[in-house]
Image (cartoon, rainbow, N blue to C red):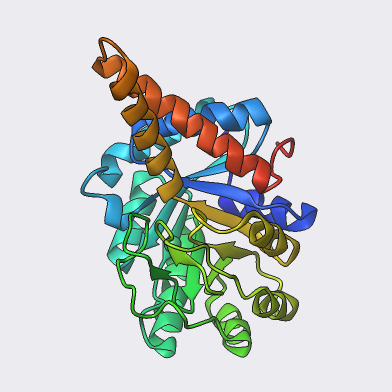
Length: 285
Ligand SMILES: [Zn+2]
């Protein structure tokens, strides 16, 4: 069932697990994700990033996400990932997304606060929840949902700035930078769990981890123990679908398009199921 973002992450916050937020670019991704979530009785978030609009136009994807959410037997939120402007967030609200992320992390702090606060005010008036970002989550340069900026990967979220940011913006969730990166990692990153613990101790707002495609299982577990309630997974679904399709094309005697679609659905289902178990959201719906 379509469920408010805030309700989904609040439950994760109270019961100490993280909700998987999966970037879905196609019908196959959505079908695979929903089938895994229902099988494992897990709440999930279907999301689309602005950088993905050329391959998955937001106004076309919104009805698909919403219909899937309505028909699902588990809680599903429909979320805009990495909106770059107020205009994109308003478009997403009109299209029916029940939460939006505004990514002002590249802006000077005052500007990020001012724009995030304005979007929170506008979205809340429409009954839509808001995620913002503080500190820079860079990009590896291989896929992912981010902005393609690989220059600022080592700028961690500041503890006192996070408290000020949350008090002044009133956003519902905060994405933080603790050494995580978007895209496909070359080497497994080491997350700054000590910094995460400090940010979590200083605030009560649920925290979000972006770049969930290559982090070690131990770091995921430590993140969840220290306040991460939502983890974004984008690249892993694309990699899984590509690899399964490659195997199918290499081994099947008479491959066809229906077979390719089935590969994408099945690979998405398996990848989402793996992440749901890892994030301990199975059995929580
Ligand atoms: Zn992100």
